[in-house]
Image (cartoon, rainbow, N blue to C red; front, side):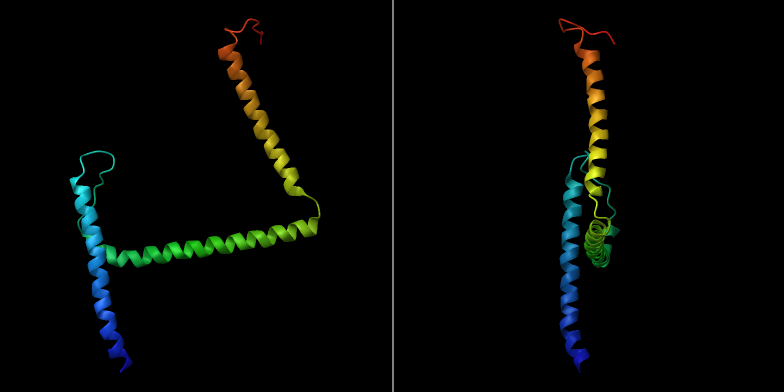
Length: 130
């Protein structure tokens, strides 16, 4: 009895879902077909319109799964970072950050100094010899 009651509710909503998704994809296909030949126009197949209601739930589940996985990994990172700070009791993050910032900063300062010497030394009043 419950199956027939759900079937009476499920089937119309499924048909409505298919019609809405087909409408969206068909409209997007039509708009894309009217675009002039430029970088925004894509070569879509007409069969993609009919596959859209089937692929949309899979894409939605994939996006939700990735979101849950990212949240889980962020939580693991926070727990491991907290444990590392408590166990080692040494601010290794600041030491690591100091090393990286110094390395990147020195590289940029060297590159910019060389650029200034190459391009601006002919116009300066006191050019330095390298």
